[in-house]
Image (cartoon, rainbow, N blue to C red; front, top):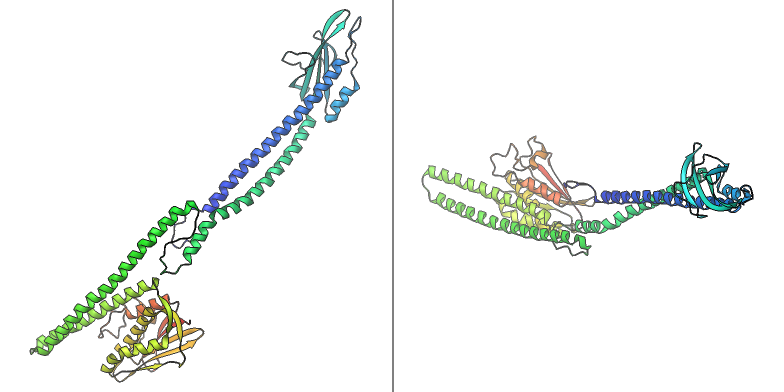
Length: 461
């Protein structure tokens, strides 16, 4: 889930891919290194056997009174046969004249130095050969004759051996890559674990928990934690200023309006002209409208603020209902409206913010009194059902007049049948916000026989 953040890639994926690329490069290097070492080792073995065979042949050469005596030992060719089933070629020259063997077998390009073999490669008879050459002097008919012995062998066995070793190197490289891939995933998880633990620790905090993060973190995360703590500190200061502003605004708005209303009422009692009295009544009505609207706007701002900065506690809803009804008793008496509470004898407790729940209940009771005709009853019911506390405010007022109940909870939304009653259209909006903040529900419906039923449901303690 992005939670509104713009995703710019995955550190885990990037780290795993980089480690896999490194593992692939190392696996390739391992393969080519093993293949190169195997090729050199097999070639060195073949060279050693070729050199020994050439020296063995050269040592068996004998001089005579008339010609060179050539006796090729069986051991020379048996050594070459031990390497593999390769073709063997040889050439013996006496004073640059081929005495026996393949007359066109290539000679070395470098000068020979006695029985120290010289090794070289050449192409002959449509085959790649590896050759060894030695020389020695033989006394023939009283004269020294320079004799060169060249022995060559095809590379089929060598290539087969190198191929087998290369296959094993490839299998070893693949195994190494597979192990490295698993280690890359584990390494990425281990490297990112402190970051995930930090995110989990911060995510477990409640909205009102603005303490600095003090969890031990790796050195690389210290700048991030410092920046986060700085942001938390600035946020705490901003929220504190917001709360102070809301409280001061409520005081500085309500007090002057109350003073204006009191002065207007005094002037109304003292005025003798009917037109002035009508004007003053309009002023009083406008002040009442402004005071209610300003009060509910501030109440809504308080509810929104407290939704993120809740001070949850054990709340006895029965006691809260009684306290709210007592506070509205004078207003209800002025309209000859009876306020009653229907609640169980045992306490009904919830875990929540008292200010929020009280604000919601006060708005519901205020609406019920405001829109109810005289000589009617407003009842607040409290029940428990399915691990929830159910608060219902019942009246015999104007009802919904066929309006969609969901539309009445919007900001500044009022019914078409209450235009003659002072109101701001924020009361039910406040109740809806409180229900969301308390993980509850709110709904309003038409009562049989007229009136309205407003129901607020909150999870029990």
